[in-house]
Length: 430
Ligand SMILES: O=C(O)C1=C[C@@H](OP(=O)(O)O)[C@@H](O)[C@H](O)C1
Ligand SMILES: C=C(OP(=O)(O)O)C(=O)O
Image 1 (spheres, helix red, strand yellow):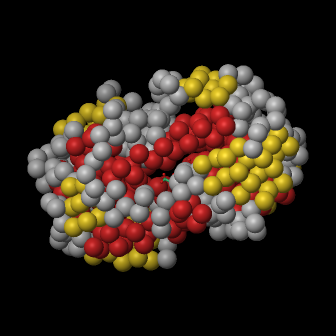
Image 2 (tube, helix red, strand yellow):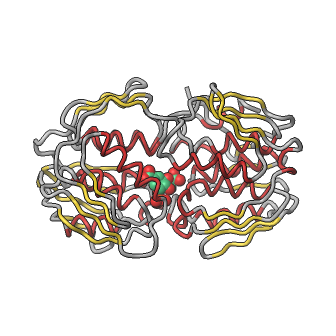
């Protein structure tokens, strides 16, 4: 049962070193890929330990409304694939989920019927035009009123010719993943070539490729900036979802700021999740990071955040870790420079602007750059920390709030995008 947290929410302060072992919910990125692939598969699938959160429930609903079936009643979600029957006019709510807005339109092309997409107000600002233009080039009819953004309608016919397409995926790796996930079901497969500034979050493309190969799909990624998916069946799978390693960031950060230890159970020994980079980032900041039989344990410096050293890092590949990492940098005792993350201005909010404003608002010495942030040590104070409906801004707020009395996190409930009952879970650790 979820309980409504106060708004703004007084973030609990870690008055002593936290010592905790936590089991975290499943990965958003793995769950939503597994659901899409199951909907396109050659038989029924099971997605075990699926993440139950707003983004994954929106995905389950989108696929079900198009004619697949996702049974979300238990922890293991049974998926019956899409049928070839015509769908009635279907409406897909993308919420604020990039994975729904980008991954579902190629699937809609494979449905015989109209699928209308819209989402939260801010979702209309998040980029998707490259995916729509690519689908048009691959033979799908789309009406987006010439905007290249939500709302739009995909007029599916049940088949997509596919073939070669050139896109600029510098705004989001999800553009590439979207085309690859459904590409095997296009008549000629898909051959995606990227032309533009470097693709961010490339580990997420590697995650897509690994999941496709695991389902028997042939993917050629031997050339940089080119991914070719051969036409063919996508095998049904029974797969367990790993814990969400990006959502581990605030919990491991809690060890770092309190000078305690937090162990995340079931940390995979090998993974495609970019959150695995936290091991290295936290070690660079002065934490002890150990793999134990129980999971991954992070121990903060003896004097907590005062012992943290700043970070000079290019986060281009792992941009979604920026809010939590920036919060730690604001608390560190030496300067930091986070670079290579211009693209996170297109995330749930403009994260560079939001972090500069909100961390600055509680006393951080932070400078916003076109592609990053620099932070220097400063004494932080309490105050309201706005989240802009961004779950990871809420994570940043609770991290600084664990170290600094009087931080009030506005709309902490927005964490439900990728984590059920976050505020209650967090309070239980402090
Ligand atoms: O494919 C995915 O599951 C994701 C890709 C990344 O998106 P961008 O490439 O837009 O950064 C990441 O930030 C997002 O949280 C999840
Ligand atoms: C960028 C993110 O989400 P989305 O999948 O909505 O793009 C994120 O979770 O940090």
